[in-house]
Length: 390
Ligand SMILES: Cc1cc2nc3c(=O)[nH]c(=O)nc-3n(C[C@H](O)[C@H](O)[C@H](O)COP(=O)(O)OP(=O)(O)OC[C@H]3O[C@@H](n4cnc5c(N)ncnc54)[C@H](O)[C@@H]3O)c2cc1C
Picture 1: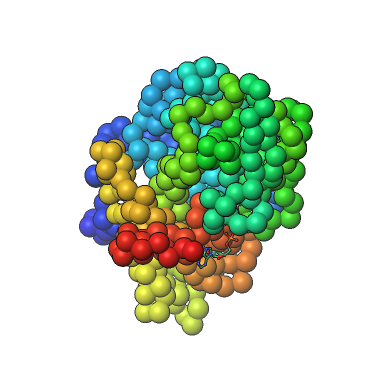
Picture 2: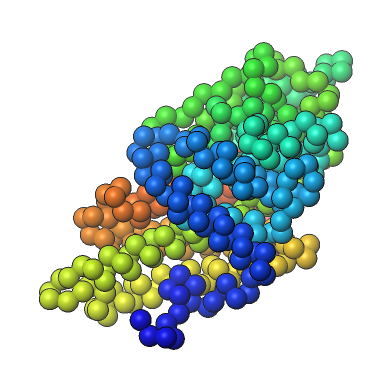
């Protein structure tokens, strides 16, 4: 290696742009992923099982609700949250999804829109990993159009009565509390639905070929009676759930970089070791172009996410910027994973190597939290001022 060789996974030395605290977060989570996460993930994926034994460690590291100040949370900045997502997803998108849902889709709305009593009850317990949350927005008839939700809540005395169902919900069957979004006469409201309450059932979705180390399920609400104290008082309308999605999508833009880095790392190593036609296949022009293209895409994604994180920390990030980065970075990571799979030849379909697992996971990540088309249309609307969804 020459003295001037750049880090193949960080060609533009983004590390030097991080503060000391941010670099420390990245290194700490990175070590945890190398030591504890990566050794478990292959089996968790193969067994279609969430590695619950990691929850305590994740909590101990302060990774749940890491952006929240107080309530036993770490109070880190947005770039640090992004780096946490990146390192976790270098291990597996399933674990990153678990942390994203708990932090951005459950703790964020309770913190931003909840009553003080709701915050005291849930946030410290969730930060410690003693309570798990899920986020129920998507319904079976079409996740891309959440404003058309059928789940509804009606006032009945001091209570609300909820009916409907939610589909494709991460953590559904392991959650102690679900933040469920339902239509009311006043518009969409958020409800904290606790496990075990009469009329509330969950069911796991079996046989997934993607995010197998993450729990996904359905929520069923049949005349579920919710006290007013469990309604999020601070928000009405679609902007409630959409603001949560903006937080989570921001984290995804970073997370998928980690998955892509793991794939480039494997492809690089494999192509250097693989001798074909008398020389390592990495010495061929065709292979170098493919590897260079992966590095180009990763670098672009890194620059987008870091810029987005700095904007977010200044309070200047807009949802359409998040859409552009979610679209770009998920597409880049999925293409990289597919190409890395191919670079490994037949070995690429084996779980002994990481690309096939990341590739299958990324098929979910490019779909959830807004499909690629949805994000393209958000950017199109930003450019033209015209809503082309309908
Ligand atoms: C593993 C996994 C975990 C998930 N976790 C959660 C969760 O925790 N909570 C939650 O609420 N949801 C969750 N989701 C749901 C996810 O957000 C939805 O799957 C996603 O929003 C897409 O919705 P849909 O599956 O109903 O597809 P649809 O909305 O039915 O879309 C079908 C197709 O139509 C395209 N399309 C949509 N609109 C347009 C248009 N205007 N013009 C042209 N094409 C269009 C889409 O791009 C897509 O290709 C999860 C999904 C998965 C797979």
